[in-house]
View 1 (tube, helix red, strand yellow):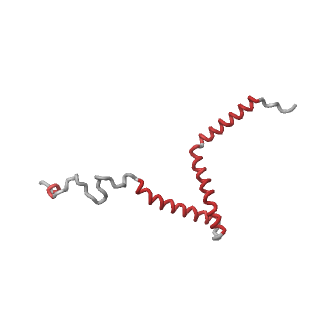
View 2 (view 1 turned 180 degrees about the horizontal axis):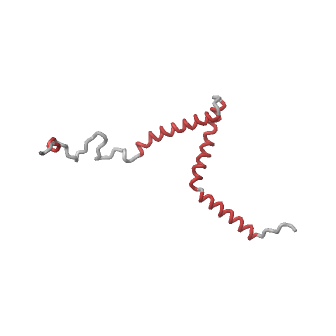
View 3 (view 1 turned 30 degrees about the vertical axis):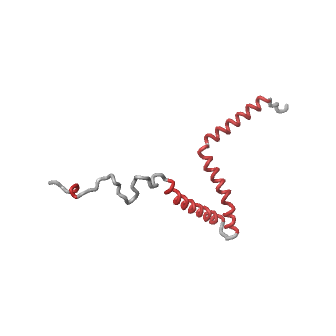
Length: 119
């Protein structure tokens, strides 16, 4: 006896079930997917630089990858250090507020009699 024929309804149920299972798996792994996708994209972008250092400079592949990622990290730190002070609203000078080293005008100036002890 041969294998039974799959009717159209059975095929549709199996396909829909597989799609639902795939969507459920993607939902459960959602926290992991973005870092994995970013790692794949970053590795794909940096691969030509690693190849260049490996072939032209004669560096071992592992060392070439470490150099490229190290340079990327240094560049990222420089960009963040240059942008963050200007992007943070708490550090921007605001009209009417004292900046570092300035004394606010509305605070009382201490005098000696405030500091004296009354015995």
